[in-house]
View 1 (tube, one colour):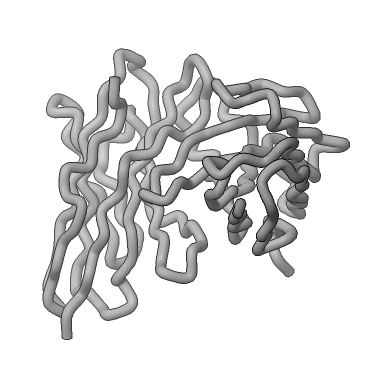
View 2 (cartoon, chains in turn brown, yellow; view 1 turned 90 degrees about the vertical axis):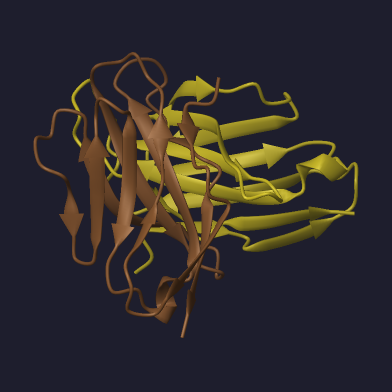
Length: 115
Length: 117
């Protein structure tokens, strides 16, 4: 069963606007972590933001924030004030605290920021 | 100073050949990983080592053999290469993700693009 689902294969956003990239997950583990990575066209994987399942506050890192809705099992990434350099693939990932403890990735969303 | 370095960045080879990809990290992490990214950009864990001990071994053909001589190095050897092995292979490292919800963020190398002809 798919553990991480990203339903938006591609998204467009105008420069300077905010955009939300969706991520839902499935786990029965009460303790887990959620991650977002960015992969620009150059290919490297860049860590953006992390949310622990017990964290009370939504995580924020600069222009990135994570809209964590635990009951709905969603962990959407919000990018504020989009920039042209934000054009990239974005991956949501989860790590459970039991079992393999490796990151399981979603299929990714390709974001294109238009001038 | 590159945190996780992989070599080579590009590999083009014929079917049936054997090839290796090397990975080194200077972050002091104790856990290293190999991920495969296919042509549709899907990332899948292949192997993970913690302090030289294999802890994750996904359903990967036994033509793939990882080796970790020490906790800073993780190599991937592939025998009898097939067309379907063409992909980008990422090495990554982290502190061992224990039972808590600490981030223990994975730091990735730049990737090694393998093309099998």
